[in-house]
Length: 169
Image (cartoon, rainbow, N blue to C red):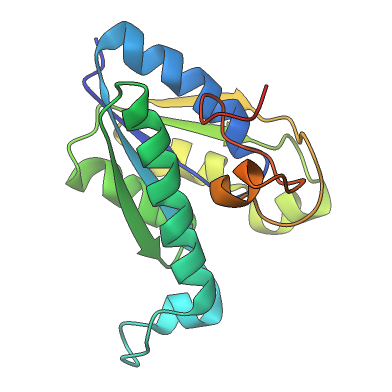
């Protein structure tokens, strides 16, 4: 079935929904996972052209991806990380092709009304431009507050821990 699954993560509580699903799917199929986060702030979009250093936000995103990958690997699931910068929809579709993925599994937020009307959603963009099948899982916002961090969650913070990483439901 699937051998290599691209999993876009937002570094938000919505990640828990897709991580729970792909953990089971990867075990069932014996697939490896490629975790990707697309930083899309000003510094991230211009880091290459202006030869900028990686921003603090990008370093935090990289650390988060590596922590999630380590959690998956501790569960016996092969995982690697990609930190990209730019337009999220395009970067996700390009990464799926470049990394040889045969499925993109991502969470959605549902509709955000005006924002979706003006800009569209990343999931919708990926669905339209990717040649790789896309699995969409409706995300549930588990908590509010700062961006999730595995180490913070393990230290007793209110931030969520990705499923299976210990300390969470």
